Image (tube, rainbow, N blue to C red):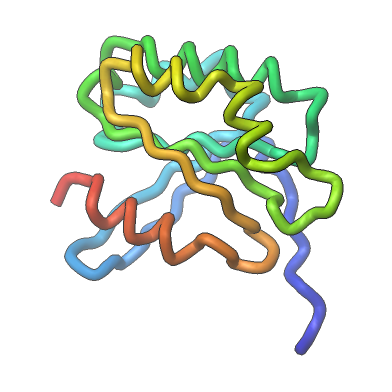
Length: 142
């Protein structure tokens, strides 16, 4: 078994085409630093995947505020939303229960106008990737 792939934060924007079981999906990845212009991409979204770095507890409150901003955006009220707690393979991360508590995920899910799903993954090891792809296949326009 070789070294795990190096992962880097997205600084700008990336486009990726994925072929899922039932369809081809284009994923536009926008880095967190691009938060101020995210709204210019909302009208073309049928679903949103919001990635949280669960190893960076200092960024949790900012991530929660960004998530609330995304969920309250009018063009996204019909979009399905997946919140991914990433880096679950690292020993320094909080438990998923602790992360959801800090985010107040139960309150967010109860008050969001759109369906919100949460998953925990490790982009480095691939843990949870099949669940993400399955969610994406089920929650994107054909």
